[in-house]
Amino acid sequence: MRGLTRRDFVKSSIVGGVALAVPYSKTRGANGDIRVGVAGIHGRGGGLVREFHDISGVKVVALCDVDGKALDDRIKEFKGRNEKVAGYEDYRRMLEDKSLDVVAIATPDHWHVPIAAASVVAGKDVYVEKPLSHTIAEGRLLVNLARKHGRMVQHGTQSRSSEGITQGIEYLKSGKLGKIRMAKAINCQLRGPIGRVADSEAPPHVNYDLWLGPAPKRPFNKNRFHYNWHWHWDYGTGDTGNDGVHQIDIARWGLGVEMPNAVSCSGGQLFYDDDHETPDTQIATFEYDDVYLMYEMRLWTPYGLEGHDNGDVFYGDGGTLSIGRKGWQVTFKNGKAGPGGPRGSYSHAENFIKAVRSRKASDLNADVEVGHHSATLCHLANIAMRVGRRLKFDTKQERFIADTEANTYLTKKYRKGYELPTM
Image 1 (tube, rainbow, N blue to C red):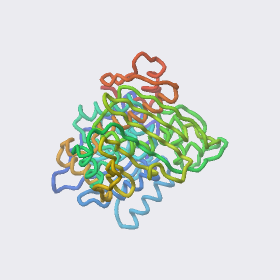
Image 2 (image 1 turned 45 degrees about the vertical axis):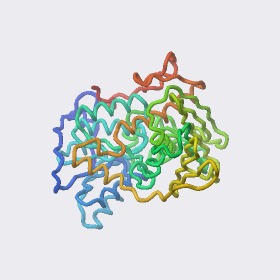
Image 3 (image 1 turned 30 degrees about the vertical axis):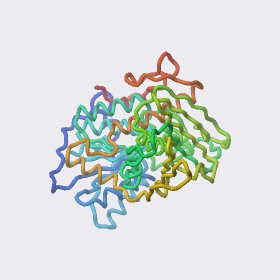
Image 4 (image 1 turned 60 degrees about the horizontal axis):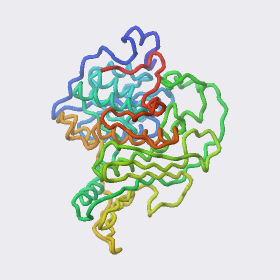
């Protein structure tokens, strides 16, 4: 049997269900294999399995998913290559493997920090997909735990490892476009409706209670399951946290800013009339001391905005710098084209493995703190939209100023047995 029953887990763990009594793993030396386990192997998780599998000196030795069919299918791929891999239904059982060095996480958003935090406490380094967290408080906790336990934690914003985008950001910071006064992060695409689906019994091959985990108990619904969970607040962060986080991260990177002083956001459903809870249209403004960061999202447009479906535009006194799927391009204020180039290759997983070996967080292109800042902007936009007003933010305390309602969104309730560890 894959995984761990509820009864067995209670016997083998302490109260809270995450602070496992497992010794820290010792990362292999420069010539040793790094052993990786992947939690969440449906969709993006499959991509991570392939990325880590293809890195020299790295072995994917464990797969974890509550969907038994998805897990069996992926294990068969390894067997077809005559490779051994362990399968787990429950991540907590996987973490008992003392030889495991790294845990890569591509679960629904509401599981990112619970699994990442448990992995850090268990002595594993972590690669966690975007967005880093489901709430602002979760993100800060993971940063603190990573620092306390000396773990490498990489955020899955892969553009940070793109050669071309790095060149564009370096040009932006050279001052050749003068003062940069605003950046716009663009998330513009067509995502079809999901319709309306009645609740039903969970498929027999799915451990649905474990899939819910810390989220409130409610009936199974396929429109809240594979991928479509993104559009429900209990599990996802809407497309702002799903896709917009990439553009927001690039905008923040180029501007050289972290947390904003204030945020305003409006949004709603202009296109969907179905089971979506999250918006299909959203416009947010993040206010810094001397620069603004704008985010614009439309999920009903098969055409671009300023030449982009997903991209960024930086506005300076001397012209603009545009970053998109094809690369980066400078346009001077007289209309003439300046320097530019393709996005180039990226090796985000390889960059992470480099830091795992060096034990230097400074080697990470998207360290946990970087991920926390970018994910926080996504949360700030969603919160401002949900309360319907401009919010002032204390960047040191990471709390809203004089707004009790908004502060209730900084964290959430966790179902009994799935509480987070504490510092």
